[in-house]
Image (cartoon, rainbow, N blue to C red; front, side, top):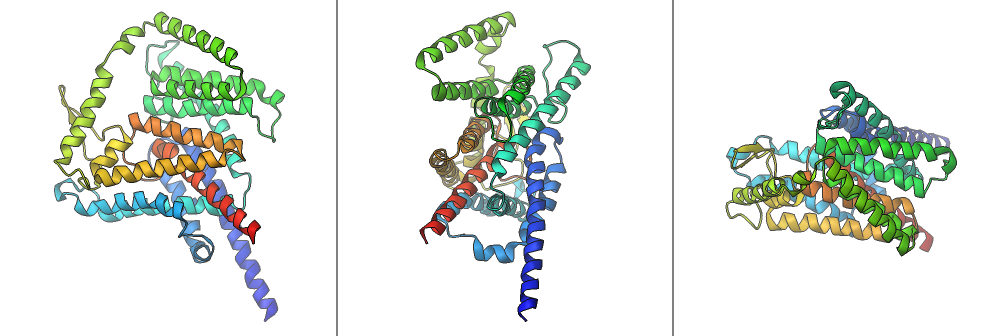
Length: 411
């Protein structure tokens, strides 16, 4: 009997190891897929087969091990649960997808954090290896996107780059701004697995290539993210006199570049700002006074913007969209979720510099989604998951694992 019991445990442990290795590879492909998979169903399918299904298969043993009563975890899942349930008070004429569609998206968010927890507690260098994978994914796809652009338009900077894989200028600019920041992060804080001298040229080249992608996308917000990251790096590593000198130099160079390209008229043009204001106004008007609980979650409720009556699928702001569908309660929950994750990240930075980059990634994601985003309970994949659920879940799961390790040490 003892031999049979040992065999059962061995088989169970072996199957568990196989499933976790599938998730390990799948998470890399899924998270990095924002660089090399075209918008569509590829990323959701990768998620379903390599993360969702293995997580479900491991659920019986996981229920005994994972602390579902963890206060921060409960606060994390409370927002997507509320957003999903808000479907029940949506007006019938607005409903285009049934409740199961939103419930499936909720389970994807839930099982994403569970899958990360299963992998990260066994693969101690998961975050380090993930950042390296993202660096190489962005490096090679920036080359492909630039080749595609110059083959299509020739040697010109007058056209807007939409990318070969992403097909949206704001999205490609935002995603590659994170890649520039990641390259600069490795430049100043090289991982142990690579030597700085051997990779110095590659990192500089990566910054230049991704910088060209961001520049050709003609998106504005990515430059805010890049400049902010440079300031953060300088504050951590440089004397204030160097910071002042290089800030003035960069500012002067930026003004000269804008003047040379004739971009002052575009910068002074308030049409973009006015368009954002119209979006917010129309979203609030659409609520028809339902400010406490919102109008209820539906799939793609368009907004018609005057004066040209342009139809847009969402208000291009994650917080406005959460307020539109979930009301003041939904807005409070998403803000609370963001604040909890930022607080967790600030606590974790002390022991791991890579967590500092994840925290910056999450905060940058909030900024990006405040200009280009929508409510986050959508199908897995794409830039919204890349900017919100991925860095947010990484912060949460790393904090849970550290808490579990602390509790074991105290026993």
